[in-house]
Image (tube, rainbow, N blue to C red; front, side, top):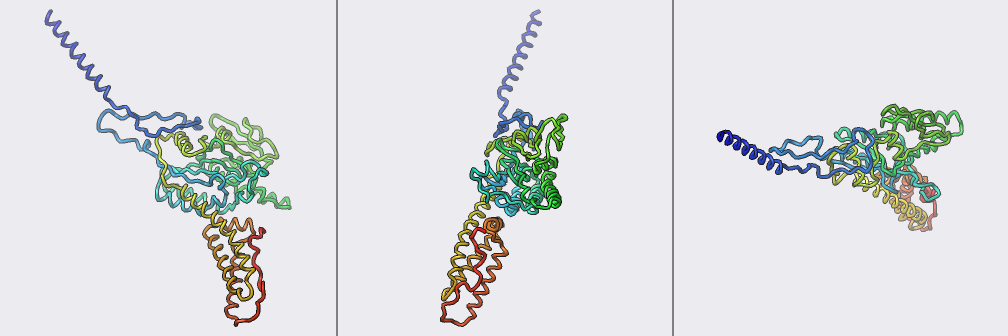
Length: 432
């Protein structure tokens, strides 16, 4: 009997020792999460794949640690502005020349994700409240189509994902916003203004007008098709008589060119369709809504796309685009002043100082031509505001050069010369 009691006591002691050991091990196991920069989303994501914030992982208690899942590694993000607030003129601030530099920079740095931030609005409120018509976008469909096609191809070749974030797009810039399949909008963003295509299709002959309009609408809808969007959306945004509604079947959306759908976007024959951030998300046009300002915008975006950690590259497209925008606008202001100097020099080109002032006029034109060559946006803006084109300036420079040659060959004359002996130039700075 005593022997049995002894055995039972020994068994209880062993059990207690084992329990104590297990408890000690559990208290010393590390539980710190591996995420160092959790994303904070302000709005519920639009797609099922991003409906829940991923839980932080727990470091294993057994050494050595297992390798991290490549999908959970820190993602590098490269931001590419397409316009800035107040400096987002489509076709000028947003011009192919700078995005060629961006594509080359991305190819060298190889980020995981490229985020385009579109900020280009022809109007902020309404025309009579001070919007500058000179800042309205200029649409060269050939160059912009080539820009988007080449940019997409170059970024794809680098292995990076591409995402478009529309901060504001009113006017032709809406075509860019709908050129990428992965598109988000900021909380105050607008996607509208394609009524501007009417400016390019106004002709008196109704038959010619109809054909011209169809052709141009087709060109513009090509941007939507490249982004995977239904052309019916573009038709309603560009043609007032076209209606637009949507019907839902589960998660699938069917777009209709009438007002018979369950969600009516446009049921007026005099209205152009447009979208806010809320309507675009609810209709599945955008993948979600993010904050208006960086860095919260990136945090929202990365959270909605299901990434645990990310790091924005310290030198990305923002620096390149900012330098370009500052550069061409400074060059443009310089050219406007040069026009005044040119007219003054040409007016003084007579008498004994004729050669001196002709050389000054020629030097001024050469400077303007050099800036036009460096920044095509300068040439576009000068032609738009002053009616002065590159060919016209080159022709004027040749005329002045001939006058200079003639004066150098001619024998000295005691006369006073003939003021205005040749055309006075193209009227630069006259606001033609």
